[in-house]
Length: 119
Image (tube, rainbow, N blue to C red):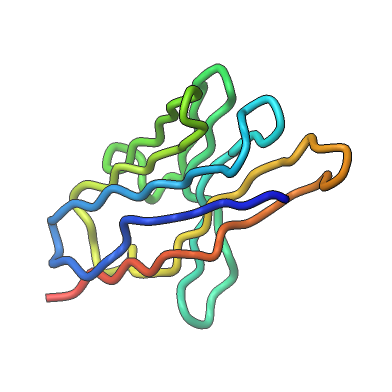
């Protein structure tokens, strides 16, 4: 079975930081975590950042210079360090992964973690 467990969300004030984690239930050889997306109320889910298994990264323009995506392949965990948070970063954040499992192939999403930025 493919499971993605997210953690690290919460309520912070503008300018503060949070670190999100997404841990996969199996090794990187079976589950490749590809990145983070977010969905604000009334809006479509949007890309935040992606990372390849080799560590190459890509960011949405709105988070460049403030967010950093990284991974620990040994733990098959991907992190999203979010600095200088703004109210417009408020959303549910989801990690996305591809499963190479022959029994459970395809694209998977985590359960989501709420990030709220408010004074």
